[in-house]
Length: 413
Picture 1 (cartoon, helix red, strand yellow):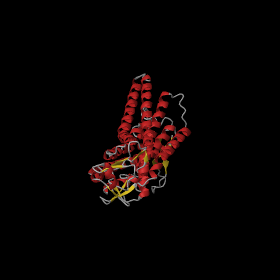
Picture 2 (tube, rainbow, N blue to C red):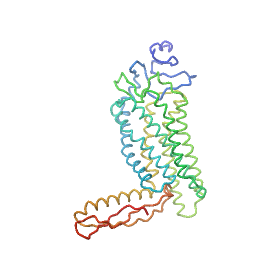
Picture 3 (cartoon, rainbow, N blue to C red):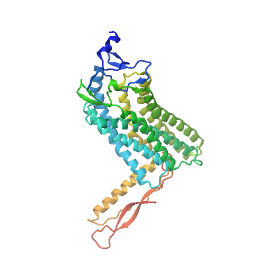
Picture 4 (cartoon, helix red, strand yellow):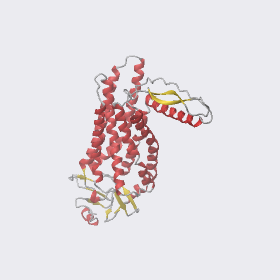
């Protein structure tokens, strides 16, 4: 069939679009400066809905999108929500004395948390057969937070790598202040917010006549697919390429500096731990963020859009980073673990003492823990003061005059 005659079958499409009936593909000519949004192919656009080709229908009805993706998002939500919330609580509330590293890590945890809290809607969407029931505004917010906070995480990871490089290689001249860390964090949030503004300017929900569902982001009307090619390229460069290069360079320079610090067996052990940590961070960064961003960049440069199923799976893989960050950046540190564990233990013992004191007097003695000495992995507590349980005599009213119960309470050393 001559393509010039097939265009008459789709009168609603823009004049600069060529439609190939066999596959339902549509894209601008090679000399166009516009590119379609990465989404499923549309066979025909009507006034109130669209008709999808069989290939697009198979994606929306496959077990990958209706079972596999939501199950992965459930795991991310269950693991990432409490761990990131606990990290923010420790960094911003429990640590009275802030430092630049803790400020950057708190922002990383916040970005991951803002990404995770919207996952229940995405889970419901996929389990419902990719049928969006929450309206157009919430779909736009979901898409914006999904992309925005994912790229926010990559940029903060890059900032943390630079901060650690300067703290390790230039400890004497290292003068990054809390004010600078706050300014950097604010700038990151502003840049990411500006990058996501165009996502609010187009309808993200589309009624699919074939399946009688309303999709969110997965299908875009051809008449609204005039996304500037530079937008996706800018998003990929700012949100992935630049942070990736910064992380690789910073950790390579850090590794080179650590080789010069090898003086004794203790230093060797700490050096090995630091090297393992850097390798874990780089591998996690590359594995989580490279596939989706490579596909996005390829699409923006070649206008090839026959890999959407692979693209959404890659996005799901990138989402795993939000539940891995707490274990790589926070809980891998012995100081952070002891800080959290002893805080929870002391709180639980105090609660148990108060509950049981009405039955019989009891004493709970908790010794002050020895300050941890392993600071090789992540050095976010380099300027923070330690905490410990300090025993204190408190009258809990046991019912017998003169009796007091010793209760473990959190005090600042």
